[in-house]
Image: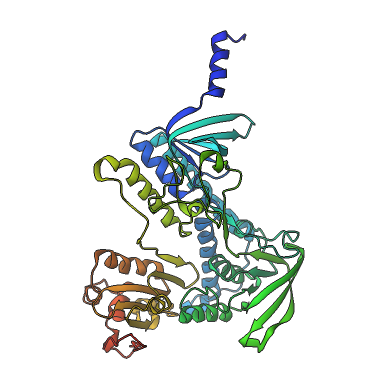
Length: 504
């Protein structure tokens, strides 16, 4: 059919005049996804641009898929421990393709749920590569090569981070796994070499070991999860060692050779007190696969940020103030790309900050900020590690006097019913009041128990409110009564250290 002059004029206009939106979101992570649904539900015209994933990393390649795989590994552990529960199992095999398929089904279901929410709220989800071409204006290149230009009254950047690959000789050529590829394995690695003893390295090391891999963890620090208190680091190391995982600490990687998935060699130089040689001892580790889990780097390249007037920090993250405003008017940044703590729940809170500052400015001044907020976290090993507020290390570094309550998980009767008595719980209480400063749990259900303490901290309740509460028996959270009563119990480990005072 022959195109009319008016149709051609409209096409030319569409190429030169951006589509107008109340809000354009570049990057479809969890915080920005909830932002899209919320703003659209309030009647705003919203567009979300993501180059690959519906809902960003969390439901596709990170938080939820990894916990899915980790739970399967927990089931494997239960099968191996069957005799302990009176269950006889003559033998079993692990089908990693089946493990992967369970994860993929979950991801597909989440994608469908997310798209239904987009349809329900009216927010547009655009699959394509976006970049700024002018202030508050994003050009999107679609899969078919065509482009769209979107201009927002406000723009939120939420492009997240990606696994950082260190500049180690041979590492790129070895085609190492990151968490993304590790969660897509359809075979059990014969020997997995894990570079990095942080969140990802520790969680996946335990899971792969339970599936049947030989696993070696290599970390440059003197402790796993080195920013935690020494007792936490020691407990994690003991946990992994007891499961047969080899751990090399104070180890610097000198060279990598081979191809991950076939055969790979890692040359390390291990130094420190533990081997008595400060200059280091060179070792060669051979494995079938290598996993790199040494941190994250922000996704800020090729976004055209300079064309939008958006500045970066010296570490490459988007520069924001406490209200998450960038250096460009009308442009905001949330989540990891803004340098926020690298947790999905923090990206959601970042959304709340921006939402408040955009929607309540005329009513309350829109003064919600990120400073001073709580940052809880949970490491999903088995058992879990969860923390909120101050650690002992942080309190001592800041010269804050505190009372320490600490009991082993064996004091929790529910843990006995589950045959899961490994670990401990501890809490810091302000020396001159009953205010809870921090809580750490290393044990079964640690993440859920932490939530009860966090809510008490939010409400400003004294620790005695939990100590004297009537909590359901037998539950894991009931263990908080034992914890905060521990000054008078046989399990009391409250101590006096420097400026600290006894809880007795």
